[in-house]
Image (cartoon, rainbow, N blue to C red; front, side, top):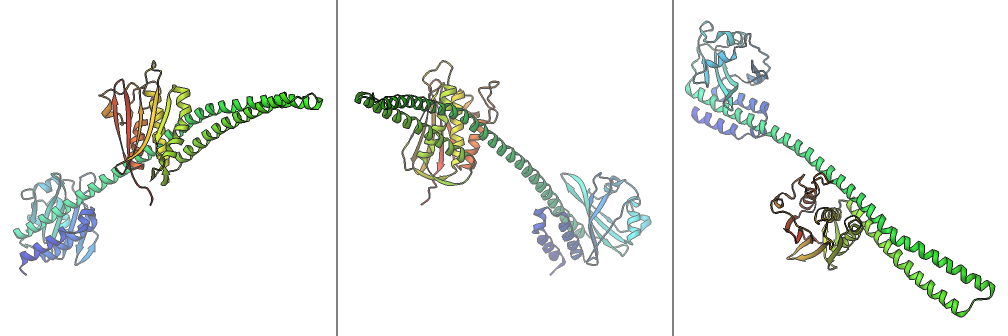
Length: 441
């Protein structure tokens, strides 16, 4: 194989090294040093990079007789710019003459004397048009003539090191981006948790108020039944009880029992719905759910809050038997946020017939959930930004502008779906959630 072909093959081989794309400076420097020795048939080579203050060069890797060598050389002068100015065309510098005839003795003389260098060939490494280092070939013989092919060979190798430096910077940028992304992700997760707890807190207040009504009726009914029972007991003990009074008591007792059963069942169902929603919202597990039951529990839990605080009626429509494998906790948080958001934002103060409807259905193998209110709608200019963080129509009135951003995050990241908005001023606002159908077989 001719020498030029061998040099070309060496350049091709080193250009394919994985160390370049990894940004591994030391490993690439070793490859460059060995490639220099093999390509130029010499025994000593090295790779140098600028130190942090750009005042001197630091040896990254050196090879001497096929063995790694540690070079701790520091120049006696800091005029490295003068040294670089002597490079031919700003690329390479060949020193072939006796020591007392060198062009730049102040910078290299001590190095050449210390290492007994007879001939030296340097090539500059550039990064973004700036000099960042050199690669070096050395001969112990004096007056060795470096060929143009030798200079070209070194210059090609400087490009290899430049690529490695670029890869290292890209990896550093990526690592920083990953750290920033992780911080943002952690912050986002924390915001979702805080929003979840705030929502549950509001629901607790609403459910507590709603439960008070059937329980209050129950307490009153029990008191009345107790009074009637004592009356009939007194008549029985006195022997004055009549059939008419006894039948009246039985009728009143039956009515009281029915009223008690109705209100206690109402309270139990409300507690059951809220308990399931609360459990769901604190569990990120993937489960197979019946969409009808899930939406029913959510609307039952949110209904007291919307009725008490915002005088808003909540309805839900969904056929039983629509099953999907998903994260019910995220669905609960999404629908709850949308319902509460409607109560806060959707209606003018003067509107009386306030209503929000939650509907679930399956269309074309997709699960579709809509949350629709009959409120005043959203201005056209605001609609494209509605899911952006800190966008709110209630600035200064308790609106953080994070609710819908959290909803979108949960739908796209946790539920692997999508969400869209449709709004007509003075008529309605509708959020449509599309979820993948992952029902278990």
